[in-house]
Length: 205
Image (tube, rainbow, N blue to C red; front, side):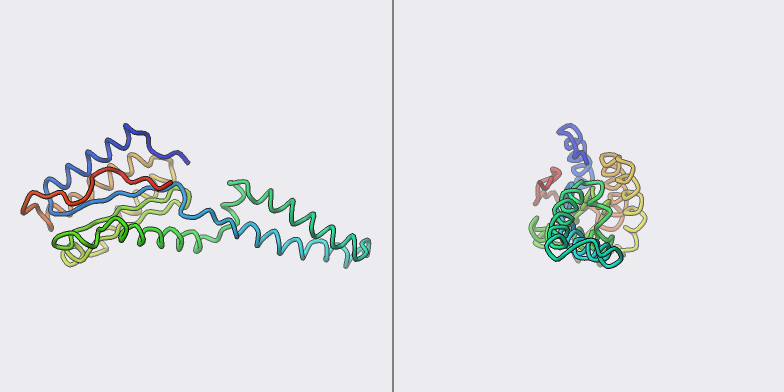
């Protein structure tokens, strides 16, 4: 996964500023390459297969004594632990529900850590993207949710998710921010000049 360059980040910041000039919303954009390293999942799979494979082989062939069976289990565990660390394989071992749960959990933590729940009028909005999970979420505070139904964001999220899958994260951000801006300009128009939170893209390492 390739996170955005400095020039790309400046384009995102400009898009945020353009929306905030015409609305009371405070937008924060968070991007991470991966919501979790999932280090425990390859070990779980390796452990299960290490217990199962040598035992099954020995059950049908009776080739292994107790010492060789134990060594075989250790060997299978070590080899599979290394193989399952390969990113392309690792991703396939992680259930989609687990990936989405971790990404969703991180999005909610970021909503709090970026102080979006402390804006005047409750007009904070988080656009969160985790590239490895191909996960996009939009979270808003009550000042926005009371005026715009959450269903308004569904098509925007779906379009952005497709952009992330295609490796077009920058264009996805620009399109998403502009689409959100159209809703916000109608329902949460600017009533005062303010800029409570930074307009730059937050990239999590």
